[in-house]
Length: 467
Image 1 (tube, helix red, strand yellow):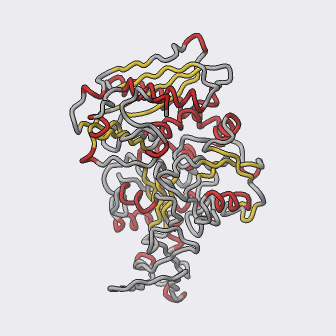
Image 2 (image 1 turned 90 degrees about the vertical axis):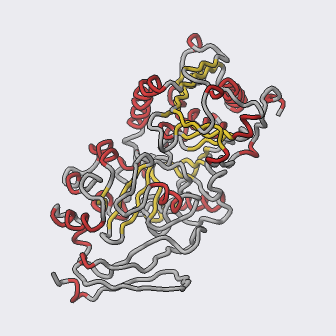
Image 3 (image 1 turned 60 degrees about the horizontal axis):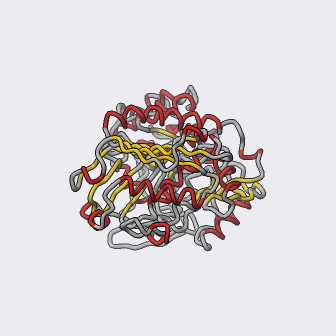
């Protein structure tokens, strides 16, 4: 591309989806081990933006040691007659898009979860300064979003300054999210779809509704509407809602049609409000995972920044690998934090009455949206770190899932056999815990490979009354 002749590495869509592994990296910014990181776009008036200005606060890329990990704040200020505050989130999400056009630069996630890695090869070619990254971003933004007339970018790597400015960024994110609440899915004719992450998850299409944010947490229904209006041929587009096939599970005929077309037939049906059957696919940029815990017939929630193992013994990274990639995986559901505030949150699966565990940090963030009677019954890492300790606590708190332990038949779900999207729900046998008061049924398969549409374990009714 002629506009990048002065950039020492290639720039183009061919590099989307490129991964930079740790042994290959020169430096990284953000990521799971760095708490302070963010990217933010702010709409400004024309007279306050100095077009083309790039500012670096703290060490530049070339000043950092090989293999180092650093905090990072990216502030992009834009102006133009048609640039409005409602477009900030739309423009902001494209930082991910455009960074991944650069050879040897990997950008993951969004908002306060960003993770960038620069490869040694690109660094050795001369891509060694944020000035170069800023130039690429400015040219791409102006070229693809001509409503932007002026743009200036600030990169912050000074740890104290990143920490200080992140507070303002978080305030902005919260204000945007609050604006999107109130409208209901049934009240609109159109939803919006996003394919920004298809380079990482080819069969994934994020469906954005008034009551279900994009998995990344960065795009609301209003953001989707604005993006589709200013860039009709872009990665965010209008989806005709169509008829309501199932209001409880959140299945819509128009969504199914769009999903099938955009995934080239890989995904045919989607339930917007359930983690079972035909759950919404996940890319890899989701803020959190709602994961099924068969031992207690409930759900846990874990977010990207949670350290250590979740109550099921698995860290976020392991479950993310099982969840991501654009597949439909029963019981592993990538979600945004804002979706936890929605009345449609896992509606078909019992909603908050089915949630048994979540990190205290997330619980505090969404506390006001958890039903009052449920909030004290949901455990955190401060209460339980193992499944065994969880069961007794759920009983003592009289959590609603305890009643489910007495029900029959009992259906449990774990990961499917393959990593490909399933056409039918995949339910695998597991142990029915003794805590259910049933004594348990245990199936052990050694050296076996089984393919089945569904396996149902039925506990005799007379057994459920024991204990």
